Amino acid sequence: MGPLIEIIIVAIDLYIWAIIISAILSWLIAFDVINTTNRFVYTVLDFLGRVTEPALRPIRNIMPNLGGIDISPIILILGLFFVQRVLANLRYEMMAGGGMGGM
Image 1 (cartoon, rainbow, N blue to C red):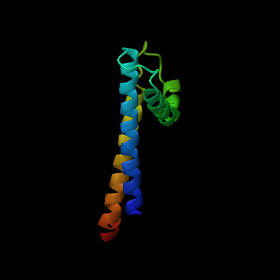
Image 2 (image 1 turned 120 degrees about the horizontal axis):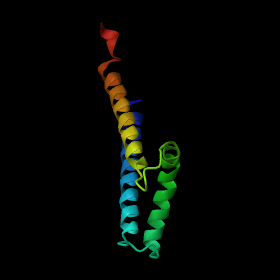
Image 3 (image 1 turned 90 degrees about the vertical axis):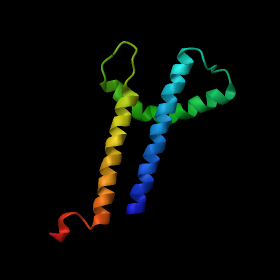
Image 4 (image 1 turned 45 degrees about the horizontal axis):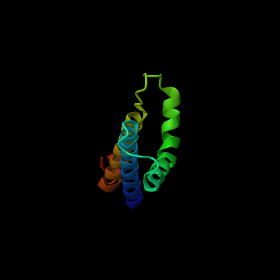
């Protein structure tokens, strides 16, 4: 079970990086630094949008309108950090012998 938890933690790390890259790219597009007519840029944006949008959409639906400021990626990243900590603690307890079993 320990290696499975480790793989999930790494997958969450990769997903957090995808969210960060997606947010940065959206800023660069908003300030006309990146041109979306470039095929490679469009492909990367499309991929990141398909990967991150299903997790961000429910958060955006719950959040009130903040006047053009989208904090849903921050909320999602904080939630993913929480899940990582829970999994890391679970892995630690499994490796330590199951918690209070030795008392």
